[in-house]
Structure formats: C-alpha cells, structure tokens
Image (cartoon, rainbow, N blue to C red):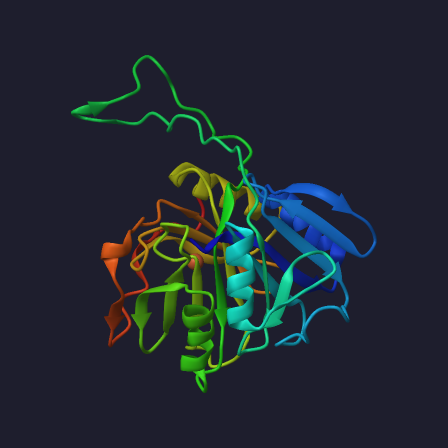
Length: 298
Ligand SMILES: [Fe+2]
C-alpha cells in the first residue's frame, strides 16, 4: 500500500508554555511536557511535537520564527517503509524514523503507521422532514471538542521549482495528486486515505513556510463550538466559518502560536481512485459560503 496517514508534525516555537496552552485549549491530549519539549496526541494517536527554540537535529527552518520543521508520515509495512525511504533517499535515525528533507527544505520522515482503536460512535441524530432520527430528545452542546486526527497539512512553497517540489511527493512518496490548481497549488492524498486531500503544496504566497494543519472533528457543531471555545480563550480567529469548494469541508481557522494556522474541519469529500487528477487552469472559488452577518455582536 504505502503512506497511510500523517504520523507526527514537529514544530519549533518561541514560547512553549503559550503553545501548550493553545493546544490544550484546542482539545489535543497532552502526553508529556518539560521545559523544552511538549508532545500532544490526537484521538487516533498522531503526535504533535513542540520544541522550544532551535534544534540542531532538525533541518534548518524554512522561515523565520516559529514554524513546522518536519512532517512524519505513517507507512503500513516495514517493506513499504524501506522501499519508500529508498525512493526519497531517507536514512534511518536512532529513533527508527527514516528522514530526509524535501525540495523546499521541510523535514520529511517515514515511520510505521500507528494503529488506532478510535471509534467515532453513532452520528449525532438530526432531523429534517422525511428523515427524522431524533424524537423526544433535545440536543445539547457537543461539550469539549477533541480533534479526531490531523487530516491534512498545507505547506507554502516558492513558485520557482514548484514542479520539483510536488514531484518529490508524487514520484517519491507516491502521493496521488487529486486537484491541481495551476495558479495556486497541488492537492494530494496518500495511498491509504480517502480524504480529497491530506497534503497541499501551495505556491501562491511564493515563499516557504507553514500554511496550516487541519484537524478533523466530528461534525458541523464541533467546528463551530471548537472555534467558539478558542475565541473565548483569547485565540484570534484567522478566517470566518465557511465551507471550502475544493474538498467541500466545513472550516474554521485559528492563528497558531507555533506558526501558521490550525483548521477545524468536518465533512470533507471522500474519494477513490476513479476521482483521477483534476486540473484547474484557474483557481476555483475559495469557498461555497462563509458566514455573513449584519450584526457585529449577538
Ligand atoms: Fe485545510
């Protein structure tokens, strides 16, 4: 098979305590923290690693300030791990992760994919005429939002060399280009996942850096309530609630102190091999809708 999922995202940050507070508010589970490193987990066991200050054991940062330094991808078998590592020239580190850098300078790691026993439970009952699933039962808050998984990473890359930057992942790691938006970037998915994209290389900003990491939550309510919780905790929203055109997911973005933004996402398109690669000569509209209001306060 090949690459199954995002396994880890590693950042270097200026203020570790602020970042720990941010991701705790965001709903990830803190696994460990000391003065220099904090590790959070998603509900399917992916890790978010935050290091304070620079790290000699990571590739040089591609941008100033706090940023993502390495993305580690999970592979299904040892044979595939060795095969794909050879394709990208990654060599084995002491911790068993095979590492190299991509064409932009981002660290790339390969490891065996974690196995999750996460079960989403039954969907939230919903009512519409002709499709009633909730009777004599009122809804309440979804409660504390706990992101299920990191579902995609979006990296900014320079326009120059963009084809080579994409080829590293398509030819080397056998990512599948799903939507190629010529003026903007290339959406890709990994072999083992059906999301419309797990990865985006975006050349529109024409500079290298972290764009965002997206976290899947259970549904529409979770996107809204999770975003509201972050705002209540004082974290600045980066984009209004909306639904993307490419991928169809409902989104809400929050500026992240680790660099870039984090996205709360729900209801992304799932696709199979018949989807093919869709090439867009012009950029589709960013969203189907975003929240509009004539009231600044409720
Ligand atoms: Fe996204």
